[in-house]
Image 1 (cartoon, rainbow, N blue to C red):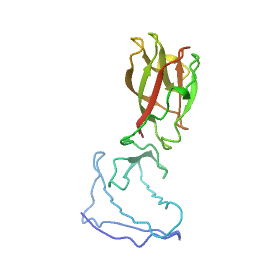
Image 2: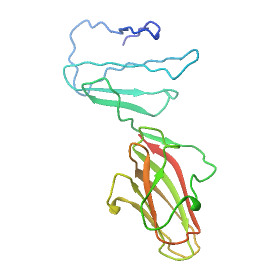
Image 3: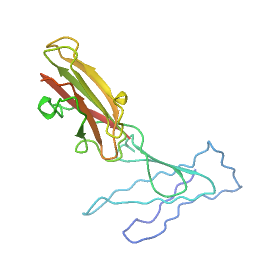
Image 4: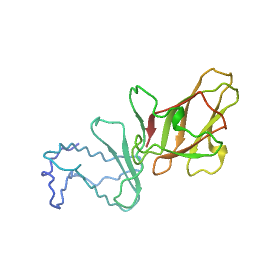
Length: 205
C-alpha cells in the first residue's frame, strides 16, 4: 500500500504522476485491481470543475470511479476499451420522498396513439431507464395505459396496466428504458380516464 499527494490541480495543463515503487516485478492477473482514491474540494466561483483521467495499457482497461458526495455516493463510471472517455454509469438513484405526482390525467391525451413523454426535466443525462409509479382509475373496466421506450416501435415492448373494476383505482410500478434524451412514450385507450397519475421514483445509470 502506498500513499502520495499530488500537487494542486489548477486550470493550467499539467501532468501529475502518482506512483508506487515495486521491489520486484509483479504480474497483474485479470481479477486483480489497482485502486486509486482521490478527494478534491473545489474552491472559488465559476462553473463545475472537470477532471480528465487518462489511462494506457497493452490490453483492455477498465476504469471505475465512485463519485462524491457519498465517496460517498453509489454512482459509478466505467469504461472498457482503449480510450480516455468515460461512459456507462451504473446503479439506481432514488429520487427521494416525493410529495406529489409528476403528471396527472390532464397531462395525457388518450387516443390509442403512442405520444412522447419528456422526462428530461427530472431524469439526468446518462440515465438508461426510469422507475415509474402509475395509478389509474376509470368508470369502465379494461381501460388501458401503456409506457414504452421511444426507440421501440413494437408495442409488445411496452408496460401496461388495465382498470379491472369500474371506479376503483389500480397502481403499479414499472421500469422503462428511455432514449438518450430521456423520452419515453405513453398510450391510453380512447376513454375519459378519471385518474392517470404518474411519478418518477428514480432512475438507473
